[in-house]
Length: 94
Image (cartoon, rainbow, N blue to C red; front, side, top):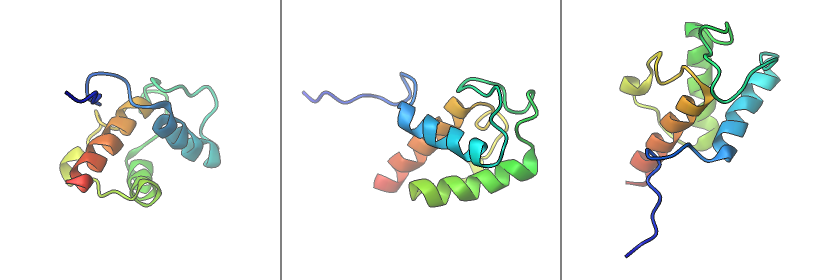
């Protein structure tokens, strides 16, 4: 029996979320931002910025994000973005 953690059962590791938050800090968009802040409603992200983020995530985490994953719901919070990263990592590892 293995002691495997199912990523979809719990919150993503803080490391991914913190690295994503750092992207917002570097862009000057992190004031008042938390892991579960609605990025669209809070004005932190728009469609163009989301595409910039996809490129950043792919380079930073060495992943490929499927077009089907690029949805408003998946990019609504830092936590949900970290979930996209985790799923892409799982697909990348085979």
